[in-house]
Amino acid sequence: MGTRLSAWKYATISALILVALISPSNLILKKPLLAFFSSEEASRFHLSPSSHSLRSESTRTYNFTLAEEVLSPNGVQKTVLTVNGLFPGPTIEVRSGDLLVVNVYNKLSEATSLHWHGIRHPAGNNSQDGAAGVTQCPIPPGANHTYHIHLLSEQYGTFWYHSHQSTQLSDGLFGALIIHPPASLAEKARPHKDELRSERSLRYHRTSQSSSVLDQVMLVGDWYHRSGKEVLDWFQSLRSHGNEPVPDAILNNGLQLFNCSKSIAKIICDPKQGRTPTFRLHPQYQNIIRLINTGSIAEIHISLDFHLFRVIEADGTQIQPVIVKEITIAPGQRYALEVIRADEGKYDGFWLRQRVNYEDFKYPNVALDLESKSIVTYGPRWDLNLPSSQSWSDIKAEERLDPLSLQPLDHIARVLPPADETLMMYVTTMIRTATGNRPFGYVNQTTWKPNLTNPVLARNEFVSSSKELIVPVNVGNTSNSIVLDIIVNNLEDGPHPFHLHGHHFWPLYTYEAVMGAGSYKWERPPTLPTTAPALRDTFVIPAKGHAIFRVRFDTPGMWLFHCHVLVHLQSGMAMIFDVLSDRIPQEDRINAANSCS
Image (cartoon, rainbow, N blue to C red):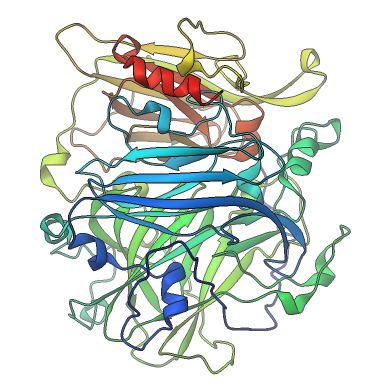
């Protein structure tokens, strides 16, 4: 990751076909939103909050059959991993306090596992986290496995599930997981005060005060035309020289339109199979979009012509709303936002712009459109004309989302506990003669290689090694938790989005050096906030810099902490927090061991 590629040119999107959305057969049927959307479309990416918020806690069962299918998401043929025949996989909708049961039937040609990204499991449920080699053995081909996910009564928001085995995420094995609050919490969670970020005009407020909500999901992420295995093999070969593989496209809900003539690689491409993603908003309703970056490497800058984003949630934390023109979202991160129209009715259709952070890459890929687009329109149908809207010009720094400035909506949650201890970490990718001059990811001089036949949670004894960095987190007999400051130094010239399993953390500080290493200096500590920012589970550590995360560890288990750039994770940039291991129930360890039977 490195220098700006000024020679790249934006490609022009040349065609439009309305999105055909297929309803998964195993999902609970949902009522269409009046006659505004077809029931088929509504059941795919449109949500039904009231169907869950108004009911009691219950057991919700999903049956997932994983398979390999040859698809052309953007016109380019590829073997895609599907769930119940769908890419992306079915959207899971539940409510706080539910027991989510997912029966996974693995019809793939390789082993797999599913991780429930952002979920805080209660004590005794570490074995349900889905991290292969840590909390379970992967599910063999032809076998099945059942996850029992106990959702905490206080957790709700935007989450997702994805494969945590090999490079299957980059081949399409993922989907949205939405937890709705019960009705008693829904009103409390609803923001009552706008916090404008530079635009103070009344014309930027939501024009409709209707209590009706149109709630939908956008799974946005980079996409490779090669298989994930081919991408990883290239990265860990001598040919890459340590350069991360540049993606070929950006997909939105599994779709995009690709210009076949731009590819210099051998592909099977039919432009008629590609589709420009199209989203319909309701002119009289409150329009909520839940953004999830499902990609393997790229941060994506998202803006909507003549609209503002009123951001209300980050990684499952309800926040004091902020209004911005552009959001940057890293792999693994989620934001929920309300769309605010600001064109005074001048246009019928608008471009949603998904701009790639091209500074992340060290070499060009002429196939990649640096600003892919989706269409957003109001009304039940679109007339097939391309939007004529213009992008925001000269977006100021204060009009972009500042993730460090986000505050929790609940004032009680703004109390920041002091740290009991501090842990220093260094992360990087290195090419060593000892590893055959191939790049590997490192955390404190260790490169993680999961033991897929003997997961850490199932072991009676374990020690940290050069292949498994396991950091013990223990407390005294009179305490049930410990607060730890984690200082992560990034020695590379590219950012790392780090994700913590099973817990959330407070992102207190980040620093990126203009020159030099930018590592933390004990003799010149920064001034940290005294009130708690919004809790996150995925956050970016800047290039040649560092970040300070404060986390309250209170759930016994083996919890993975890793970079969410897929080739970095698969090449070793991960470690494990051994939290209160003496309090892990024996049943949890048995469940992990039984997954290997």
